[in-house]
Every structure is written in structure tokens, then in C-alpha cells.
Figure 1 (cartoon, rainbow, N blue to C red):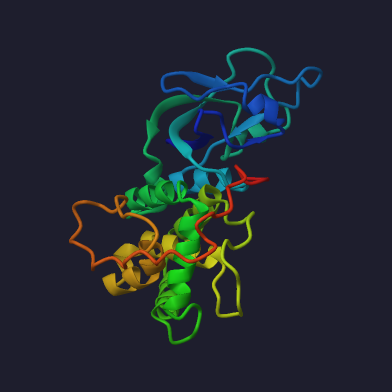
Figure 2 (tube, helix red, strand yellow):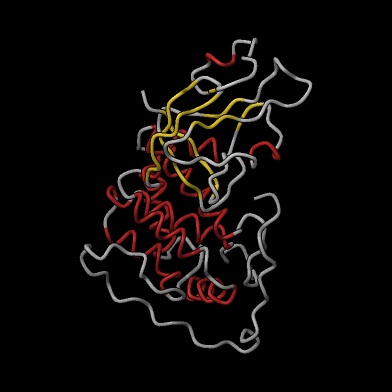
Length: 277
């Protein structure tokens, strides 16, 4: 039976049991190879174990316990260590852990995100390259359209998305949670304050805009197109839509970019990768 394993962009495993970070970075997952973690010196019977799961989304949820982006997905099967001692504590037989894996092939990471996974990946990639000024424009567009007020189209769409999410199966809900975590990791929105000034409780946080958008894209097959467009409207004012599937029917006309606002022509500079992600 196939198992799945998540790595970072360089092919280093994302999670393992009883394994210091320097050991995770010491191996690279490559199709056609046998991968195993080195045995720590002085601990011959307490071996590190690789995390493997029965499904792509299960593997990725383990991988984003501490969110990161981009990530890669590999199909593997359990194998025995090529040399050295075997674990004596029974963990080697646990379904989600392996002493070594035979790497079958790399699979599209879009498999982790459900029926609309390819679009999810394109969107996360696109937002990972947005500049602070673009997030500012998204926030200004949202405030101008009513912000978080109960009567705004954005708030109404978010309520529909929440109800739709609650009615999904557990696996489908996990796919949405994974997409949100990946979006946060890609845009660093968990570690930054809103790049626009909050006037009152009706002013959105940057997390509100990002989470609603990626949730809607993940749930697209279950949503009316109007709901998706309403929740994407703030970002449509700030980014191009090359991430959209070219085979889809044309979207409604995008919002025009917000005008230049005095004092915003020199937006704050990004401070690089977020701590802890």
C-alpha cells in the first residue's frame, strides 16, 4: 500500500520522530532511492523514524504542523534499514512511521488540496509574491466596499463559505485547513500586523482576506461563482489573475486598482521570512 511523505522545496523530510533538525536536512528524498535517517551516535536502539501517511492530505497536515511553503509530495513505501541496528521499541511497526522508505515517485502537491488542488497551489504561489503595497490596496478596496460590516458582499460570502465548510466531510475540511495553513505560511500573515491601519472592528485583518480567499478557492466545486468572486474582490484590486485556470469560463470584470493614496507610495519593506514558519 502506498504511503506519502512531505518535504521542503529542497527535498528534505518535513517531519520525523525523535529526530533533531540537522538529521532531517542530512538526507534528500529522490525518486528511485532508499531514504533513511542516520543513527544518532550513542543511541543505537532509539532510532529516528520518518513520518509516512496513507493519503496526501494526511502527509501534508503533518508537514504543516509548523507551516511552510513551498512543499513537495512523494509517494513512498516502507523499507528496512540498509545497515545498522533496528529499533527495539515497537515504533517501527506503527502505521505512520518508517525506519526507511523506498521512494517511488514525486507526485503533484496539488493532490493534497482536493478537487480544486491545482488552482489552490497556483493561488498560494501567486500570493507568496505579493508586495506589502498590494496587501494595502487589497485592504483599502475591502474597506471601501464595506469591510467586515454585516451588510457587505464580502461578509455575506464569508458566511456562505463557513456554512459550506461545516457541511463537508472530515477529509474535505482537512483540505481546507491545510490550504489555509499553506496560505499563511506563503504570505507570512500569521507573523505580521495588518499592513493597513485598523480604524475600528469593521476593518479587516490581513488574515481575514487571505483565509477567506483560499477557503473559497479550495471549496470552489461546492460554491456559486458569485460567492467566490465576492470574497476575491479585495485581492482582485491588487493582483493579476494569472493563477486562474485558463479552461474556466471568464470571470466577471476585475475591480480597477485602487487609486494612489498619499503616504502609501513608499510602503514598508518586507522583513523576509516569518519567524517560526
